[in-house]
Length: 355
Ligand code: KG4
Ligand code: ZN
Image (cartoon, rainbow, N blue to C red; front, side, top):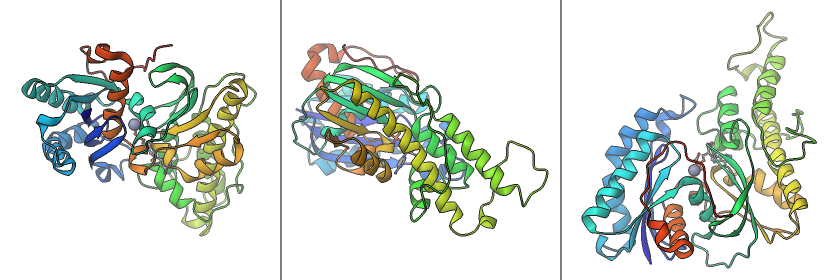
């Protein structure tokens, strides 16, 4: 089955052609991320305007790279939410028009279900269920226990910021460009992850939730305390500080310690989940933050003997359309005609899997 996937939930315009949920024939992504490097985050209006310009050439390229024509595809899958409404509408409107003109079935896919499906891209591995999946990106942090592709339950989620948001906000405090994840990971190279102590969020709480806003605040005050000897009578909370005066390795040490604290919180909740769910056969991490090598290393060190998997390429960790096409394939496989039900485009949309 050949599915055309379309994803436009944030600052990217993406289209892909995927065969049977795993074989990626093309995966095209145009992003306006560079335009937001200095703003610390995406400006919705600006992102949507760029997507209107990009959607047609991106689709054309996806068919060209896949060496297929629109006639040969079996269905169109599009991200229905959550995300930025203007951006989502560019994708869903395009998909609705194409489905009508080409007379193809249309499937609305939840963005986070796309991330959950990204592990299967380009890998014909058989993954045994039950699977514990940590889905971590700029918009969400969720822990899922799945007994099939579309069946499972949500074990915990973030009470405040998402993990990627904590990287993005931390980077802004450190004067590093958006997106913060790669910026902090680069700045942390060669730094000492134990140079500065951060608290462990929700320590001792018997649940599987996450909380990142305290770590961001701890970083704010660390920067204030480091600057204080040089700038007297500076009121709390501080604004973004210049780290130049703190010596060449200070930024690397702070970035490494902050990154370590974020990874430690994620790892701690997973350890707790695995203790409670001893039947788990595999552990998956997906979403933009799963690209983080410090997180991958910490998980590998701390949670044997369960096999840990992440998407087979960095482009499948961050937002892409191949994961949307893969997700649609699994929805059709497990839910049949129900997968083709009419859908609304929605900026806020909780993911519901069959229990
Ligand atoms: O999945 P994604 O592309 O978009 C959303 O669904 O939000 O994730 C983007 C998030 C951003 O917050 C970005 O800072 C983070 O993923 N990210 C990373 C890395 N690459 C991207 N975080 C940590 N380390 C990375 N290498
Ligand atoms: Zn995403």
